Length: 280
Image (cartoon, rainbow, N blue to C red; front, side, top):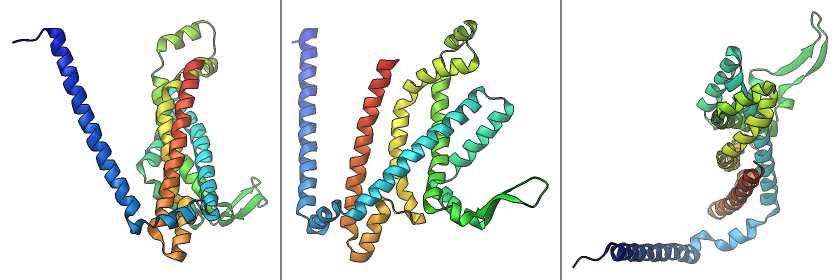
């Protein structure tokens, strides 16, 4: 006996619903089993994890990680905006410079860039600014004093972030309808006014989701600065477990904090997207 179409649709819905319930129950059971195993396994040493979760050295490392993240995103956004506009609206020379910058910083590993800036004094031991046609220096000093672990980290993270941010910005700018730009120019608006009032606000709404993802990526990438002895979250944990040999518990502490920080960034991203959507 063939069921009417409405009954067939209802039957398929019930069948799909049952499958979803079964899959959900299996997933919850597996997750509960894993969590229970982690809770009961003495090798995780949860008591050590809780002891160090809010340790002063760990909290100090979190402050450094947040400072690196915020400054790298800020400088990277400025660099990326400039490079993206050079690439889209610049002349041949500007586009060439922008593309060379993107080629270098997107084509080399982040870790190599950090090590390069940290060892810049090998290439240029001193720096100076002298008066033309004279031997008198206005400014002179040692590059080792100028390139500290913090400044090397900011340079490496910001320049790399700027390259990726430039591509994100370029995709947002390119998505703006040319008709709007032409209409604005026909009304007498200058090129800078069109960019400031038409292009930039609309492209910001488009690029916000990938920018949020990039912010999370930068937050996690700051862990690389531990290789240049920068006292971020990971390096602080490494200092502790090099003394007490509690490697796994301290790495769990690092993971907990990174999960917490990236979750906060995700929430802020969602709120920012809603705010921009209402303003445009």
